[in-house]
Image (cartoon, rainbow over all chains, first blue to last red; front, top):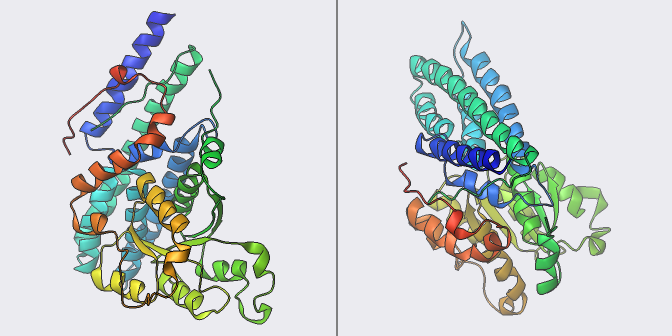
Length: 156
Length: 206
């Protein structure tokens, strides 16, 4: 049993570190983890769920605003991008945030092709992050079920 | 496993509980700021717009300022960019109200726009925080509010933007994260049951 816990903990550490190394996450995610304690044990996954709900809503708003035969209202697209940039920055979703910066520039330049490309990328990126974080939360669950403690992973 | 109640252990060591009204249109950000304040032993009320904030404070027109004395909000923290009433407009309304103007108002924004920051300070904002707000920011803010009060009196607050967080505004992300990690140390150590030898250190490559 102990060997299993140790192996899961190692796997969890390596996986978490890889998410930072590959740029999926940044320091702000570490900040969120600091806010999770016995008083609010699911805080991180709750906030991330809200974030992914935001992604679905905002990306569909952007798609609707871009999918028109008439004149595209770039300021409307830009407003959704701005919101997504804010919430991705608040949860430490680094790749999504970085994409939002380019996306915003495309909106300001009224670059339609650029906007469509950014929209596709941002859609792919948030889904990729969601899958990665689900894997991470699953590992946490397995550690706890095995009777272990989820290790704190410090990224400096 | 021992149950640790972080917030109660913190509040017992410090003076009276702060009641903070947090205003933000983003659900994610409301959730984060609420948790940041609660873990710092504050009582928190969150609302999603400036209009709601004014209603909560009893400043929505005909109601006048009834019920205000029971509210005891010690601090208002508001996002700058919101649909409808912006954080700046909310700040102005609060500072125009004789009943509310003593409540410190802190503005948060993800954008580091100097004229915007200066404008808020001139209108009487207590501080300007760059988002995302960190535990260290809240800790410093709390200390500032706790020892505020008496020092404020007799001072001409206007035109002296003394409390812009130079650290956050002028410096690069790397240096601000250094300062936050050092000043939030006591909280993170309370919240940590992993021996430091077991922690993994890693160079950031990002």
